[in-house]
Structure formats: C-alpha cells, structure tokens
Length: 252
Image (cartoon, rainbow, N blue to C red):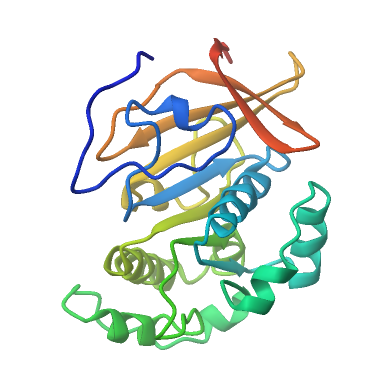
C-alpha cells in the first residue's frame, strides 16, 4: 500500500511495532477503542502475536491486562521469555496484570439484563470473575481464549451469548484495544460459536499453509481504518512474529 497522508486527529493510529504489521494499514497502526477477534487453527501463532503486541505496549510505558482461561502465569512467562520478552519488571511495577480464570466460573455467573444501559461498573459486575481494578486503565486487553468458554458451555448457548454481549460492551466502554483469541476448526469459520466475528470491530485470521510450508495472516475486517485485504506471508522466528506485506499468498 502507498504511504497515506491521512491522519485522524481524533483517533490517531496506534502502532503495534510488530515488523511489517502496521504497514498493512493505511494509517500505519490500529485505531484505539476497538475489539479484534484473533482467529486461527491450533499452532498458527495467535497467542504469540497477542503477547508480542502486549510486550511492545509495555516497553513504551503502556498497561496491559492478560486474561487466560487455560495457561498459567508461569506458562505465559516461559513462552514470552523464549523470545527474549522478560515481563517480570512489568509484573512487579503493576503495569501488567495476568489473570488466570477457570472457565467453569463463567458458567456459575448469574446473568442480568444486556440492554446496554448499564455503566462500565455495572457491566463489569455482571461479567465477574473478569474484573479490572478500578484504578487501572489498560491500553490493551488480551483474552486467551474465548474458545475455552464455549467448549464447556455447549448446553448453555444462551448464557454464552449474553456473556459475549456483556464482554464486548465492557470493552467498548473501556475505550481500549482488546484482542480476543478464538480457535477455529476450518477456513470457513472464524469462531466456534459464529457470534464473536459479528460483535468484534475487527477480525484477523492466522493461516498455516501446510502444503506450502508457509504461515499467513489475513485482515478480514477492521472498522474505522483502511487495511490490506490480501493474505500476507508471515513468519515466527527467534524475535517473534514478522509480517511481509509485499508477499501475497494464495490459500486456495
């Protein structure tokens, strides 16, 4: 894409500092206050991508909340240290909060109205145990992963829908970038429930092209900005995720 002179002074682009990724956007970064579904099959690099963005935000003074429904804080730390991302300082300073939540706790919640009229405090009360300290304003929130909830709620689809509506409403009021990881089991679906992709402002899909031994990234949708719509080559190396905007792949 050509360099753009367009600058949105009300909502300037926020850089992720992942090599090549910001160049997929005409504004050279993500708009603030959006929720993005990070979709892909197992092993495509979704969690690495989200952790790398979080680390880059933390390095430049940002704050991050990482919600994990599967992996422990120790496991998350170990996976990040593999790429040289030492997060102990950020945990100690309080700029990074990692919450490990049992998905079964979500099913024990009592769901209230989702009319959308509640304040952020009321909404956060409804979706406990996902809770952010009142004096903590995160720049980025990662949820890893929503699939863990639906995997154990197949008989409670209504509750899962309510939870998602409240969750996305909560993020919207926080006015932060939220990355929600979702496992898919085919190239034709972005989530197991087929709900998240409609609630999210953006959908980014990660592909493993096993027949070509390639990885790829695709921005399916992204509100409030102009973006590359091609399937782009990506790689995971010792430094993390790297995107190659000039290398367009065909997955058909």
